[in-house]
Amino acid sequence: MRIGVELAIKTPIDLLISQLEKYDSYPFNRIWVPDSSISEWEIFTTAGIVANIVKKARIGIGVTSPYHRNPATIAHAIATLDNISSGRIDFTIGRGSRPYLSSIDAVGTDEAVSEAIFIIKKLLNGEKVDYSGTSFNFKGVSQRVTTEQTQFQIYIASMSEYWNDIGLEHSDGLHVYSANTELLSKVKSYKERSSNPSFRLITTLGYVEPPEVREWWVSNFGKHYNLQKLSNREPGEASVSELESELTFSDTQGLQDQINKMKEYSIDELMIAYRRPEDLEAIASIVSKLDIEDN
Image 1: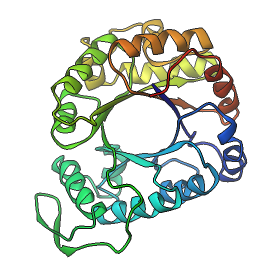
Image 2: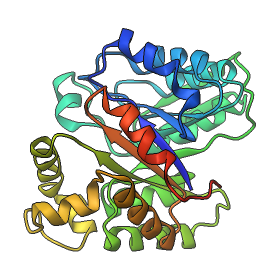
Image 3: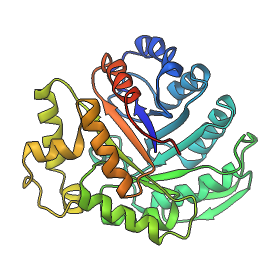
């Protein structure tokens, strides 16, 4: 199982750069660069910095969205980053935050995600794209940038059965957000049903400190309608302690227990999210003590 860390969006860019200079000494297989409207930095600019500084770990881009970033722009950026990183780029695409997209008049239709994946794959393969869809119309579009990789792993971010279905049909894997066993069982079934031999599963845990912030963090997830339905319960039904056991960890033994459980459900990768910039080193220390096999 791979373990990666999603960079904390509240980290000032100068501090982030100094932390990246230590990243190759950390026990992580991947570094995720998120796309957030409230981040201290922009995703593709920062991913370029990451690719230039971090030399060992693979680099995950996203979750990014085709509503405020055109598929041609995404493909051009991914191809450039793939060259800078010597072929270490994968990415996740998804619906994104509806309130934010609404605030910038970029809501669009759900079909934009699957259409964007189709277009991006074609462009990354060096093909000329002629496409007429619900959300995008491309006429003779291609890009000059060639890529190091011949195949890219494109995940769909999913918090519902609907997006699981879209991911199964159009992507190379699902990126989910819980260690709830009902949810893990469902996404495992999608992997078993996939005809794509490269179909993989990523889930997420948070290292969220201090405890009062952790309670606030998991409570927000507990109100998420679709995520709770995937967990076979109603929003607000789970206790804070139950949510913490599915969404977070605070020490090595807790993380080891979570990983052992994930292996039973064929999870390929864990992404660790955190809030405070100073917690990156604490997470590295915890992960360094795990008994885990990389694959």
